[in-house]
Image (cartoon, rainbow, N blue to C red):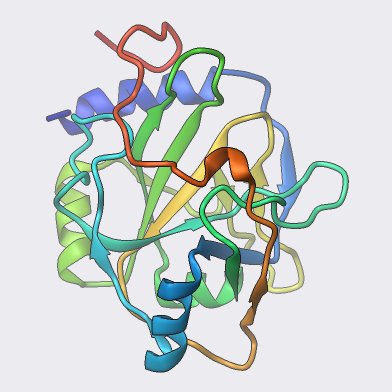
Length: 214
């Protein structure tokens, strides 16, 4: 398992991967299959589950942290969430500020790719104050200044939009608390790319010079 010092080195490699460019965001969004979507609607809540093994197998959160994975990247021309989806034909969008209000602590957890020219991914974790998952992350992950970091920025002013890195790195966020659906959320259909209909969690490419530290 990576130590916190190891993760700081990995985080620096993510910072130096390419020039830093940002796009404003409005939503955290989660794409899924209809069966899971219907379960969420019936409960009225997105409930956390154990983090899968996707990414670097040495990341301290894989198979240990309970949370929900969200996407935050937007298209560089439209500023809208990515389309088509790679995870399913249903999408739930939650205002980014609502997530921030609930889970104000931000941590770096992973930087990886799958090789063969695939894109790179950064995984962040957001936690509630004084929660068990915040204590877990504080011990094991580099904590980020949510107002000043290279990946996902929440401004001091409520009149400014959060910003996400937009240089080709895919930023994923694990939110470690249950989220009750509200009227400010948006729910609906999204096009699902046939190319990714059998996608499964997998390990990173151990030979990529950009996202490995050993």
